[in-house]
Image (cartoon, rainbow, N blue to C red; front, side, top):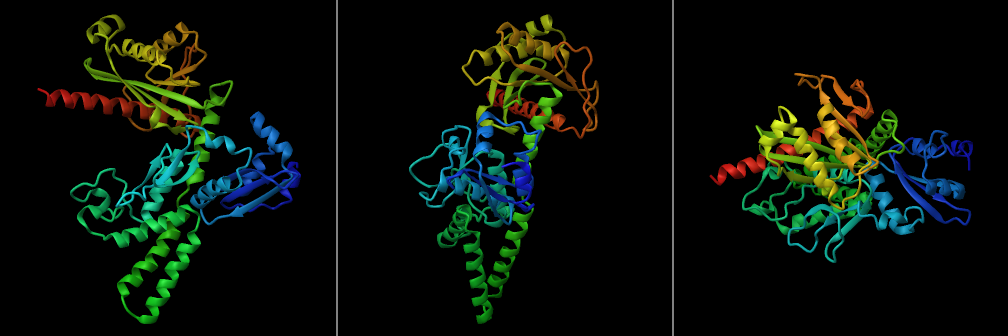
Length: 429
């Protein structure tokens, strides 16, 4: 097939899943999209940068089918269910990749939880695997707006904030009975199975029965609200658009930095301390443009801070940064394609000294605010190796978006760890 053949199919510009079949009629790939027309056409665009596997797949496609959905979340869930059903050869890699995650409903528990799981266990119900953890998070946020559920590992003695904002039914203080909560869990499971229609029909049937009996107006109003709320929440949950944005940000970053390939793994680093006390370092990881918290690492600085100040300058951060990077590369962790460090030329050189000493082929940049500027509108300066002047990207630049997300997350994680150590020291006094 060529791009002209695809255009003739008049694929709609709506959310859904697309299915590619080979000459024998076997489905070889299933994908999802916020815009089916745009996504399918993108495979045949001249500018498309495909892997060898996708290039091979394109030569085998003889038929394209699609299934429209009412929302992006339903497309995400449908893709997972279709992959399970058809086991397409070009999707099969998903089963063994440790980066993929699942939604688990712990049906083995007295009060089932709904949460993200990385590993499959014998008990409970699992849905997935899903490529994007960020998409799962957004999906669970949306589901919780429709059906309040429990997510805490241990039931507290009193209701928490989630109950107060209507996102948990408050089983810890018996504000809901098991029968009613089991109905909620059943509907969540049906939704994750892609059976929204079954849920809608069931609610509509109950509404009709209540209207005929002219009893329990409160229940009637509640059910009508739930149907409207479900539609509203799903329509405004742009899960796939979010994934696409993160992917495009990373692609744009590769272009701006003239990288050989799009960075699949980006690591961000920062140092946090007060006058050298409780000094810590942070390492955050972004995979395909999304946070990957399972790969985060924190470091308690071991060098003498006063020595670092004397030898490295006013703050001593560069010496601490070298320690963090040295310790990081002493571990057998996956190698990054790009390192982003919070700071300027000094921090950049500190990282480069460690990278070059080990003869590692890793791109490194540093990003900092202009001197004395704290406003969100202040230009961020990006420092490159062997470049005398820093680069200032436009605020609307997708490349700047991903750089700032990594930098800000590394900063947040470092401060969090520093505060934990500082509070622990105060308590031990």
